[in-house]
Length: 119
Image 1 (cartoon, rainbow, N blue to C red):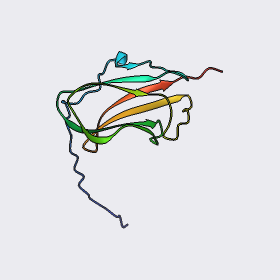
Image 2: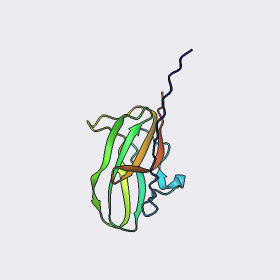
Image 3: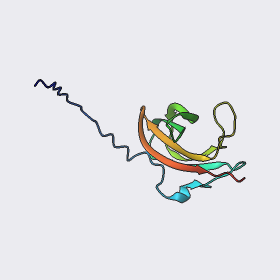
Image 4: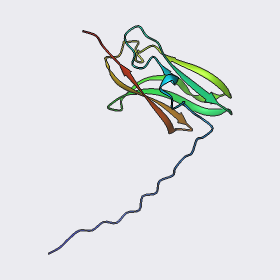
């Protein structure tokens, strides 16, 4: 009996980004859940200048909207707003969305946002 064996080494790097934070508190993303016509606000605290991007994805992982394009952003506290629309300006359907904070191209924090719909 013949068996095929393959060995491979996979290396992971853990990136700690303590200097960038989307607060863990549910109150830091308001309103959550949200509905048509609401503007979702995220609070971002940056104690130092950093190269970041903030992007919204649907639950499958498809990009929905870039809220902050990747660039250098200064230190400070910021309110980031999302009007519940995708890049083309179309209102998103009810569901779960993930707002991801990237630092130097690496996802360092994510927050779930729920859009509810009324029939």
